[in-house]
Length: 549
Ligand SMILES: Nc1ncnc2c1ncn2[C@@H]1O[C@H](COP(=O)(O)OP(=O)(O)OP(=O)(O)O)[C@@H](O)[C@H]1O
Image 1 (cartoon, rainbow, N blue to C red):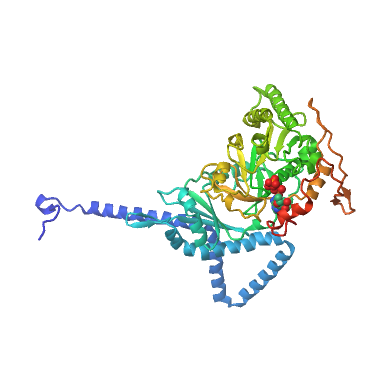
Image 2: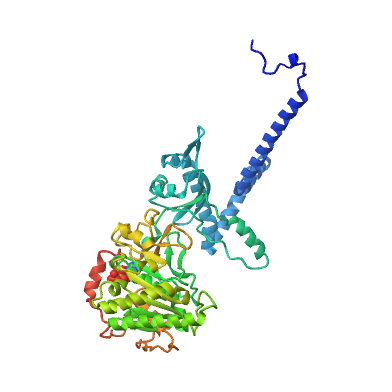
């Protein structure tokens, strides 16, 4: 027989039973308290299920006391109310009933059921201490086109693992695309009213930074295969959020133009024009009121921009020297503003006296790389360098498009803080435009099909992961209508202003809508290609034969 560890008898010490019992009871009490707290947290986390549980309990009670008739009656009343709701307020019915039902169904059937298996097979489960650490599925939110899944990573992982596994994840859950975001996609709501201070504090907790959370967006059906119609012109442009198109989660894509320059890259005929025109449409009310001045340069002889000539305070399409002069004038204007604002503010606020100047250049490579006269080319490069490095805060912005984003072609590329990547021909161009690693984080701009004109990858505010958007398609008639409705107001500046070309006003057709009556094109703005050839260019690439309606 083995000797006891402590022989109390030989030591003449009585067994300390009170101590043994106290320690045991204390230990059990602590374990019980932990279990109760965990149960409480679990119940709180699943607070959404409370009403359903309560309903089931009431239903069972009613069934036992009164039979099935009350249930049938309640079902009939609910069906009738649902029918009336669907008939009178289809949008709210879809949002509050259909989408919620879809969310519950997909959360349980698609995600919860297959979560462990999919995470294991995609290599996202960690092994620790003989057990497994599976990412926690926290929430699922469905829209018509997408499922947003929020998860918490196990320790020892970072979002890069999910970027790498994005394709595997997409196919595991029966979709073709999965976008991975390491930050929250919605900004906290703007609160107003009496309780705003309280709600803001709650939001500060609810929307706090959660480094261990990852947002997966599964694209169930691609809403960007359809052409996006022109968006309504905002009555007063909000330079921090100009609506330009649609995101793939069906939210409106808004561009922050304030204090930034924008470079649009895309292969030929992938829709660079639609980005520029969508932007001009969003600015149109400001153009008419004089809050915004657009100076346009179209090195392609007016092929793209001349159609909206009245929108521009200044416009050049045929003379390299005048293009260089215009950029020099912009630098002069910027310097004058610099003197005015020095020591007062750090970012210029547009006013009618000191408007936002937006310099639109349709093909910047033509000015920086292909221009034959090297003196003018150097002048232009110098002015652009100055504008891009100093103009953003002073309200002199450059919006430029290019087919080739390489540095040899667009030497000033790195000075554009905001970039948009439409369909590109080369894989390497994606990172050149959107920054290193953008393609690995999901910006597959080189895989955008030729038919998806106007589809682009952009970086949304504060997020390293690119989002896919489609810019609204602004047809020629819409541009002419815009130009007639929102012509640039006469400039009150010392610079020479060319008077806008006369455009026939849009005529009312009696029902409050305006129809454009085309005027014959001037010689300078006549297309360089015959219409038949232009149509032929589009025929194979646009789904409906180049007639996006
Ligand atoms: N957002 C869009 N949605 C649908 N179709 C579009 C869109 N943008 C452009 N397209 C179609 O693509 C064609 C080419 O568009 P656009 O001229 O804007 O391309 P681009 O990239 O500016 O061409 P280029 O390289 O010649 O300057 C248009 O004629 C139009 O049919």
